[in-house]
Length: 416
Image 1 (cartoon, rainbow, N blue to C red):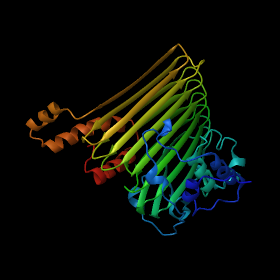
Image 2: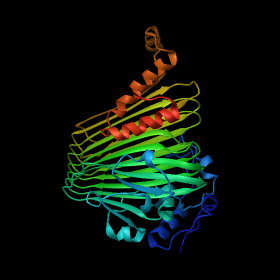
Image 3: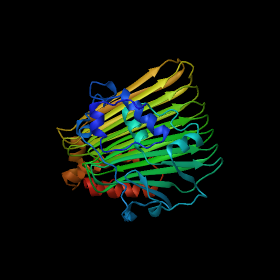
Image 4: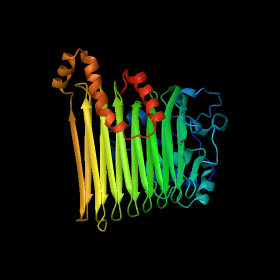
């Protein structure tokens, strides 16, 4: 029997239809235990969701032929429009990646780890109730992919919800890169609700490069759930340049020894944008390393949030875990809320966190001006150097080039 959901959730989902699949019926039933979070919830303390939750979205399986040439930066790419896989717009070789598009129940039978560790909250259950197909990507044991697989997520139309579901299994001693590109084409007041799961087997190496450049009237909430077995290496680089409200939840369970975990973020905002990054690294075993570095550049009336949480469990000795969050406010009306957290229950560890917020150095600006550089260009150069430190962690030149193009298009400057 399907549970009743709250009045707010009923209004939010009144135009949506739950599939008959057991997985999705169960997800809808779990919504009966939830309400949309408010700033009274610690996990959402600095992010107001009223602009998002007052809507009633629709599902739109857009059939149009789209020109995405300017976004394509890999020989292998998938296109997902409004949550629906568009094989007619995609191009990929199964020699490099084993790709399937599976129903929820079939996916649950195919891989026991599907949805195993995904957080049980209102947005993941909305995704679970209403997504169309799982994009299942498998990298075989010992498979070393020389080129990346790009997934281009497109929103189109008005008041459309896109529930995207991605599952990645990286086999033993495999190596691969996934590029997630979130864009909008003629989109207004749309909502991307993304759930990405990645399971890294022993000695696997996986990189996710993520570019968020959706419309300035669009919302996006992304949940990445990562599980690492021993000797694996995971890196995620997030570049956020646009979107009215963007929230990234990155949750990483480090369950095997000798793992490395890297998280980097470059966030550039203006106007009324709001970007919130919540990271959580759970060090469950000994002899592992994690490092995260998030940099924000905030202009106009925009707001940023960084909440980085690291737990080192009781028996997880010899852990090195580092956090850094640095922020530049270009406007007196821009704000940042930073909350790095360490919970350490082991005694033989090296852990640190830091957060700094400030404005551009006036002496440095003056020095550049004395060399014949205009004040605006001087400020631009200092910001470029600040963000460039994060972008230097990205090893894909094509990704950097695309990010540069969108940075110039949206914000009027580059990091060159």
